[in-house]
Image 1 (cartoon, rainbow, N blue to C red):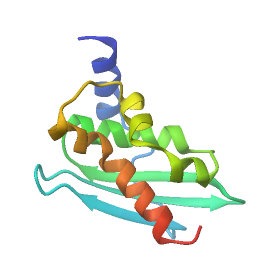
Image 2 (tube, rainbow, N blue to C red):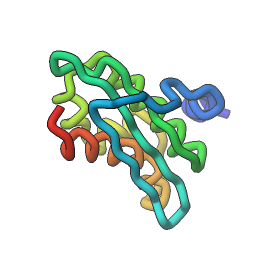
Image 3 (tube, rainbow, N blue to C red):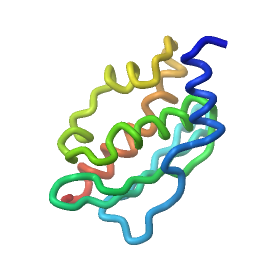
Length: 122
C-alpha cells in the first residue's frame, strides 16, 4: 500500500472531526445518489474564522477520508478560504488519481461545506 492509500485508510479508520456540532452557525448535507454516499457538515464561526467543524455521514473510504481531510484543512481558517477551496485543491488534498466516478466521492464533502457557507450568512 502506498503512503497516500495509507493516509486515506488512516482518515477512514480514525476520522478527524467526525460528529455533529450542536447549534451550528452553518450546516449542510449532500447525498450522492449514484453510490449512496452521504456527508453532512456542521460548524461554528467566530470573527470570520471557522473555530469548530464536524462531519457525519457514511459511504466509501474516499468520501469519508476526504471529509476528514477537508475538516482538518479548514479548521482555524477564515471562511473565505473554505468558500474558495477549489476542486483542484481538494483533489490535491486527497492525493488520489481517480476517474469521474470517484471524483464525486472526493468532492462530496467540499460540496456540503461550500453549500452550507453559501446558504447561510456566516
